Image 1 (cartoon, rainbow, N blue to C red):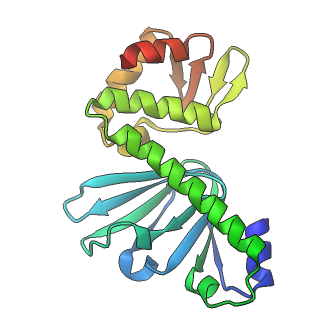
Image 2 (image 1 turned 180 degrees about the vertical axis):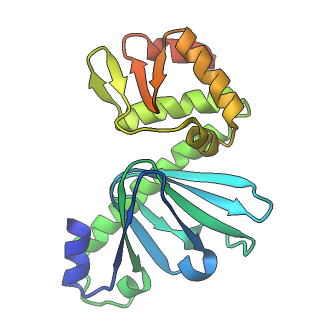
Length: 216
């Protein structure tokens, strides 16, 4: 993997974490403020949790996405939670070791910045979903986003290649499980999606047209 190869080459200390589906790591500003975390493999979502238990969804993360907590809120009354939607490997290192290392090649810096920009683009997509006042629209837009980013054509369906629980969808969209259930029932009744045992399938011949209609 390029990340491990680069970090070895330039003698930058790093740690690797393995998260099983549903596992999470929790980091506070105090112990995470100087760290970068990269997704080596897998899919996870990140949220900021406040002392009053308010949850602020931040991003859906996949391979090569980079997290720099220093760019988020510095509230001391919150922490960050990264939850795996499938088996996920993370690599953690201090960005300060990149800044002070004069031997870092331009190739590595370009690789870092390119993936950082992609991470910011993903976050902008999530933000565009969260600004929707209607929670059902948020859920529908998230399903569209998942199908575009991760969907695999499978027979007459577009298959999301990992299991996703409704409670995770609720957390990512800042809604609740009841609203998520109601939305899924509407989409299943209209034969736009099929959801079973945490597997999400979208009817590829109809879902885009029907989704656009529901968002109008």
